[in-house]
Image (cartoon, rainbow, N blue to C red; front, side, top):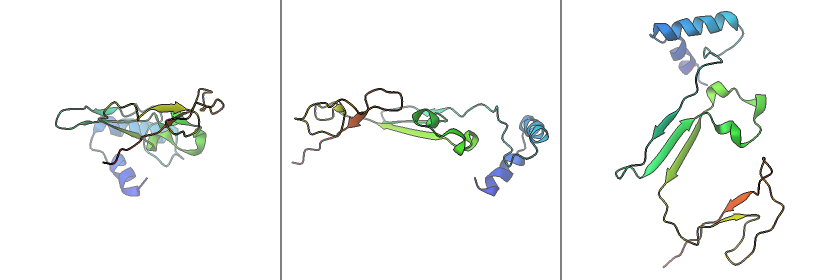
Length: 128
């Protein structure tokens, strides 16, 4: 995280935030970040609309996908998810197994971190 951003957090004009920072720094003097450990996670959503045909989410759910563990401080990580409109087509199937062509069959054995079949998304484009 850039020092300018850390300084902007420390120099916030919000007195409530300044009080929380002061309590955090007193309790954890060696912590290089002024963000309290128990600070609520960001949850921002941009809804899909006719004029903006996308959906966006900003939050800290990135760690549910894999084993990040102590290698990253969750206070400085956000997960950005974007979704766009997709026409439902048979060719845009989800296969549970290795990448396949539309004529091949599912092969057991590939699982995700939860032991569930691992999906592989294949999008087939038709060029006219």
